[in-house]
Structure formats: C-alpha cells, structure tokens
Length: 228
Image (cartoon, rainbow, N blue to C red; front, top):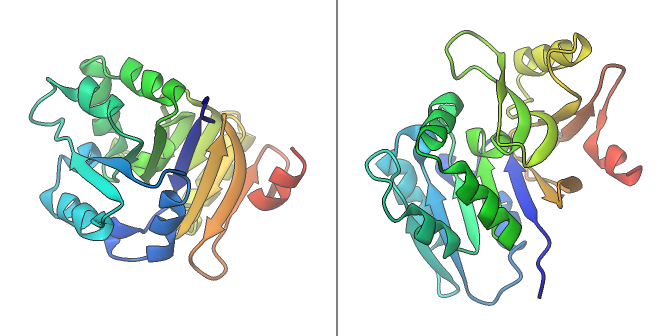
C-alpha cells in the first residue's frame, strides 16, 4: 500500500508547553494505524530533557511505541531509528542550530527517504517550518530573517504568527521578494500537508488560524485550500 506523504506543521503550543491536548490528538489522528511508533527529535532545544519527558508523558498509551533520539550527543544509529518510526515529531527551539547540525552530519537525505517512504513528519515551531524551502526565523539572533529549509514543501512559512511583529515582517519580506509566497501559522494551530499541498487546518484556540500570504493578499488558509 502506498501512503500519502504527510507533514503536519504546528505554529506553537502542544505537549512541549503542556497545552492544546486536542492539537496533539490531531497529529495522532493522521497515522491511520491501530498501533504505531512515534519518534521525538528534540534537536532544536539541544536535546532538552524536560521536553523529552513531556513527550513520553503525553503520548504513552497502549497504542503507541515511543522513542527519542538525542542527535546532539550521537549520530550513529540515527538512520535505522528514524526509518523504524511511523511518525516523527520535531520539537521547537533554535531552528538554525538544528538545521546546521542536521546538514553538518549529512542527515537531510534520511529525512527525504523517510518522507518518500510514507513516514509522517510533524513538529512545532522550528519543527513546523524546517520542511519548507524558506522560513522566517529569529534563530540567528539578528531579528526575523529569511532562512533556508529542507525543501520538502515549496514556498515559505513562519510559526507563531499570532505575534504581530512576526507576521508583519513575514508579509513585508514576501512583498519585497525576500521570501516566496507562504503560510503563517498561529499558536495552537496545525496545518496538514499531503504530498506538499495544504489540505486541512485545525485550531485548538478560538480566533487562531493559519494564513496564505502572497505579494497582494493575506487570506485564511482554509479559503486558499478551497481554491486549490
């Protein structure tokens, strides 16, 4: 059976913040298996143990097999671990640090292989935007700047777009051609991409949404999906 290629991008919140339980459930609902394996990657937080503990606390039940991989301390065995999961969840933190570590250790092809195989890729904040061609990030410590991603989804993305300063900069950079057209995702909101295209928006918070933005407009991503 050929699986659709799925990515779930979460703008902010979820289990690593002890919030938005229904948001986490939305992620689980995409797996379509009675029992499945979830792998957690806390690279962006430099393998923060508290976030890893929250992962086990949130998802431990009879239907899931849980594991994590601390890439900051070892690389050996990563490919076998990664490809043995049904769902990968990438935690938030410093996007630039995470991507540099992945690239330096030639791990990008492993993500691509898993994605092509049908492993669901998901994550929050840094783990939401890393899949795109481009992203807006402040992880270099120089304010909000464009940053290259893994190129699994075309266009650009920013998380935490409920922050006015962030979404205003995102719109400005798109209008000035510093970023391609893209998607902004509020805290408490998840976007499901199937085969690289947005297909569903789920919000666990009232009046929080995701948006499609190009040089001329900002509209609800739900409305944009209807026209695809």
